[in-house]
Length: 256
Image 1 (cartoon, rainbow, N blue to C red):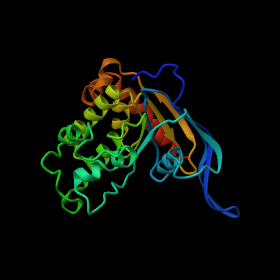
Image 2 (spheres, rainbow, N blue to C red):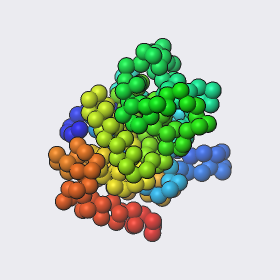
Image 3 (cartoon, rainbow, N blue to C red):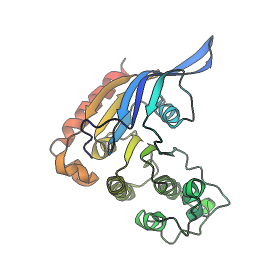
């Protein structure tokens, strides 16, 4: 997914976001600049509570920027996976996974092309007719990811999509995600607290500062053929160099 110099799908320019009243405002985002290009995976990392989720909310349109802009290509289709799975308790897991496609295209879990294949790939085969009350946190998170992907967005916003997954399941899901993005020529903006995940999955990493968040660094990740697999990426000779650089950026930020 080498982005090259392709025209961005979306561009965030001098984005400022604050909450509260003009006389008692809390500044969360302070002049954020970033862009996401076709077929690119970009990861956002930064201290807990710095505003990463708020940034995704603004990009998705759920929140309005205070100042600055989010420019998108015409009719850009965005899918958004939030940290909370937000499953409807009266719908089965497969019905929850099909909800986005149902709203968008009128498809049900019987007609959605990718749904059953993805359900099996992420390890949920046999749990289709279970309800959220009987599912683990990791299962709910996988349902939420499938629900986002089956709408076939051009840009997927993924907020901590692996946080509830055991390591072996996480690697399996990451491989499925990378394959799906590549096959469908989709881009993704990924929020993660895990530096290794950011390096293994992304073409570019944006490091955000403490709140109010600013862009501390933008780092292009070039791991060659290893980039195609999250395990092989971790074996790359350059992987520790990227880890050390990002860790140092994060360390400096924490002491500002």
